[in-house]
Length: 178
Image 1 (cartoon, rainbow, N blue to C red):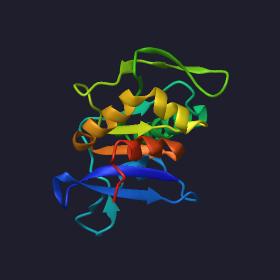
Image 2: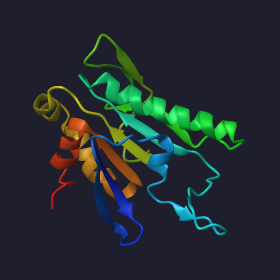
Image 3: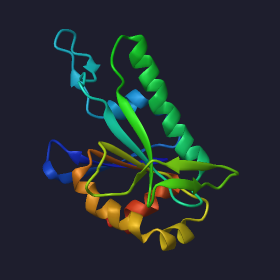
């Protein structure tokens, strides 16, 4: 299941909507952007508004993260960019790997991802995706910085998404209460 937190445009800047996309749903890059569709002026069909600039997407990782949960979203956003290019449209997403510090971050498999950015409140994305882990209790203990970042950044990010056990970071930050 995918849990997400996004600013509510209906309810104002300081209000949030919390949602869940069921475990059987297939989410594509355009589906993530299509959470806020606009109606086509002629035929009334939902259509995603064209954007002049690509949305920044941070895949947030930490020691022991599930590799699949980081690589999957990276692929989705890259495929969305490929499809946009085939339509003659500019890239819609610029993806970066983010962690507490810049450098390699070991996953749950025999691989690491290279974080090119460090978590910072001064450099926030449009979309942040916090991935899960096999041992969430240990990850929460070791990553209090991530919990604090999520708590403080939530009101400034358009979409704060957590995959699988990554939602425990949102819960620990008090963002899923109520």
